Length: 175
Image (cartoon, rainbow, N blue to C red; front, side):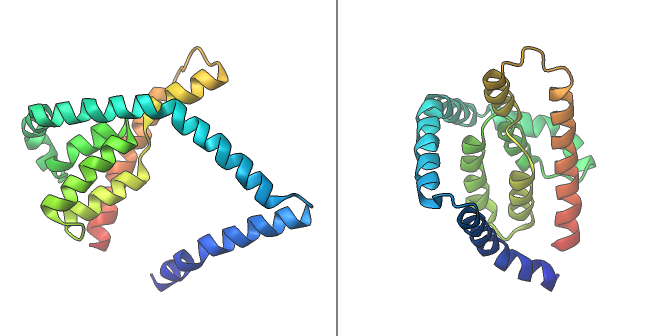
């Protein structure tokens, strides 16, 4: 366990120095490339901002209306059977559509249960190990001109389910 802690302390600085070092060795202007990437990233943020705002508003409406709580309560017997806190079901569902909206749900979970509680830690694991499936598929498939997704959705949903199950085992093992 100490090795993982040690590794996590030094991986980011190592990557930073590696990237700068490789840029210098290849005689690339690292700072200019960084600025160019930052400008491109800012353009992307401006392009996706309306979608993100729409998803966050829709999630807020679902939460304020009680629809997410109603769904959690309806599926609670199944989640209890699987040893999964039903309070995290809205987080898992929303995360598939919007990471920003899921972050707001995560903050609410932290406020209610605390970040160091079992539910808070499991929510953190789930947030870091799942992907925004539908948003990612829409953006990347549109950019690449993919018309048929074939098995992508089934594979992504299977990966999300696997991540949640692995998160439960990890949280139980470590906490």
